[in-house]
Amino acid sequence: MSSVESPRLLIAVVDRCKHTQLEDILREKQVSFQYLINAIGTARSEILNVLGLSEREKTIGLCIAHRCKARRVMDSIVERMEMMRPGHGIIFTVPLSGVSKCIVRAFETENKKYAERQENHMEHTETHGKLKHELVIAIVNNGYSEEVMDVARAAGVRGGTVLHARQAAIEEASKFFGISLQPDKEIILIIAEEAHKVELMRSIGKTFGMLTSARGFVVSVPIESCAGLTPIDPAQC
Figure (cartoon, one colour):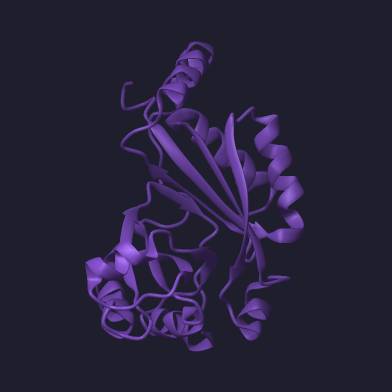
C-alpha cells in the first residue's frame, strides 16, 4: 500500500450510554473491522462535573481503516457526537505497521471506490492544538489504577481509561521476571503531550515498576491525530 492508503487504528472513547450512536456511525460508514469494549474512566467526580461528563462508565470503539477512510470516519464522529465540545468524548488514530492479508484485500477493494477522493485527504492537521500526543499504556496489578492516575495527574495529565484484563501464561512470566505475579491486571490508557511523555513514563515506572507491589510496566504509542482533548486548569485536577 502507499502511505496514503496505509492502515490506521481509530480509537474512540465515549460515555457508555452513547455506544449505540457510535456503533451506528461506524456501521453507516461501512467500517468492516470494528469492536466495542466496555471500560471505566479515571476522572474523579469533581472533574466529571468540570468536564460536563455524565458517567465514569465508558465504551471504547476500535476500528481499522485505511488512512483516508479513517479520517472521514473520525470527522463524522467528531461532528455528530460533538467532540469539539468539552466532555463529549475523545478520538484519535494510531498508524499500524502491519495487518492481516484479509484486511489488505478489504482495503484494496475500498481503495478502488475512494481513489478519486484520496487527494483531498492526504494532509491532516491535528484537530485540537499543535502539540503532538502519544498514547501511554500502563499495565499494573488489579487495584492500582487510581494510584497510577494520581501520579499521572501530578505530571499534568487530565484523565485516562481503565480496562480490566487477565494475564495469560502467568507461570512463564513469573519465571522470566523471577518474581511472583498475579493474573488480574488493569490496563490504563493515557493520552499525554509528547513533550511530557518521557517524564510521565519515568514517574509511573519508578513508582509502579516490576519490582514494586504493582508489578507494572509502561509503553507508549505515537498518535497521528486526535480530537476531544480540551485543556482545563491543572489546579482542578
